[in-house]
Length: 448
Image (cartoon, rainbow, N blue to C red; front, side, top):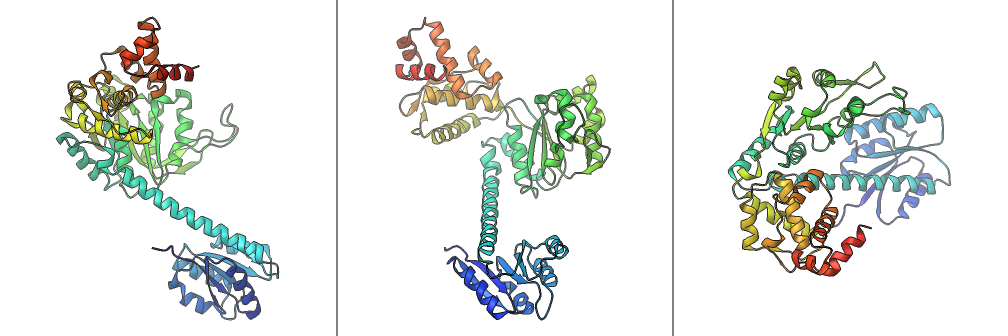
């Protein structure tokens, strides 16, 4: 199917200048040009959906501003370039205010600027198409089944809750152990909701220093404190129209919880260093691996904020309670990792699969992913064996998961531990890890 031609309407009552504009624009064979000598004919043909209208400011039947307003009322996506002999700044400002893309002064040498302006519009149209395409890809990526992998009864229940959560703007509270996929669930809700085309902003409350939390969430004015050299927009404003995901909400300092409560109740924030409220419209999704009710009892979390946030609760099950999902997830991670790293696809041996299914995975999905990626890296051939599977009773694995090291750093750490254990006997370590001697040398060199 061929791409829709880039259509341009030329509206100009001066016959000679009309032909000049048509000629200049026709120099680009990708442009489809149609010309008119009055505003009425142009408006009657808007159903042809032009991408651009070049519009004479003074026409025999109506003024350019009137036509501009009618075009925009019909289709906001149509870009209008006003062309006139006058260059009064007040007129230009009014036209731009009402949606004109640009204002060009009539001259015989208009070609270069006209063509550049139209090309800029075309680039913008292509960019918008690309953005729409990317948004559709993101939505597809975060469909329930593509995001939350599994077919257990527990995970099917989560699908049903996510679907219900997408119907309204109710606040969502996601709970579950570390590594169960709370942020993925938040994204699935956002990208399948009416807010999907607006921002999804994630904030890890545990990762923000206490003295910077207020500025991070609400923004600050220039000079609000030492080092505030310019105004900064906070996460609430960045998420306007979309979703603000507050991860590890239980870690938020209690002294700031009252300000968060006010922001949620009033739907407005006040930047640090300002007294002027700023209206915001963002959906709130929070997540925690703690029991918020217990936090309230201990005095670490405000009860009124707890009730405000706990609108629609979703509790994610640990991997050990998801029946055969570990096997399904393992296949998914193998396929993804091999594809991303341009490796031949591998299979789990029967021994490897049994070893995985017998383990409880205290680190949940995150731990399983790390185990699988390491196993792929250590394995030779097209099969992952039981010897390639390092599980949580290995202190090294536990330490790595807690520190969330990169796979590269983790692989290097495994090799170093084995070298230390076997007195730097590289050949023996290569045999134990079932990898090549050259691979060990390459890893050690990369760590220098």
